[in-house]
Length: 280
Image (cartoon, rainbow, N blue to C red; front, side, top):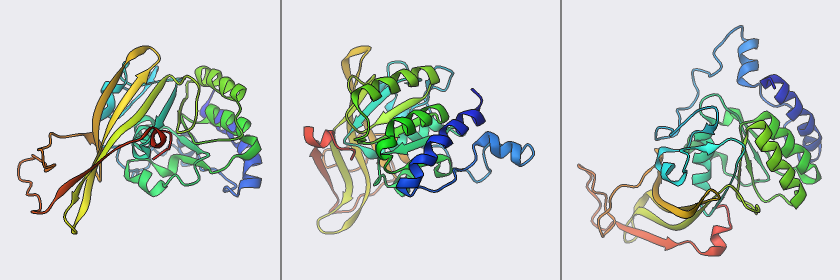
């Protein structure tokens, strides 16, 4: 289905939700529509934000790219089109996944996450000019999400009370037909991939002074196709999502030329099972 046709289908369902949720009444043009409207202007504007830090692992017809720092969590080297990924306890990682999967021409939709924190998402590389936001789809949730699956590459779904078990099963079938990917922070029975945050660490805080410079998150991935879980550590900071560097016991960076503050220390905490069920 052509991109413009997919977006027309999505707009029809979104128009019904917008009347009751207060979402803006017109969606931005797709890259293809912008190109036609501007008489062969490039699909990606010159001022588009840079891609998230880290070279995407793969980008082909069957998979969407993932951050290089998370490559070992994906047995196929990317997000399989038509799959569902559930992530708990690390909203910044969710943003990085969505941003990398969108690449430079894709679109994404955030549904049922009214407190998503889009400014933070932009800091992780998410191109907000190609993001559709539906804070609360209400009773129209099955139709709205289904239409967005037709119209965008990545759907990010929060806790959506309007979706029942049979709706989720139908959506999973629709994802496989359309080749979109669904990332969710909510409950989902048997997702293709489930990523949980096991622990978090923050660096830069001293004894009553200093500023947080970056954080590190230990992630665990379980895939339906691979029973053995995989783990990795990633760094979350101003540069986006990066592989975690080696750390000394006191938590100071070992990069050449870095001089930590005298009182600088590392703050660490494990993530409880209850927190793993939460988006951040």
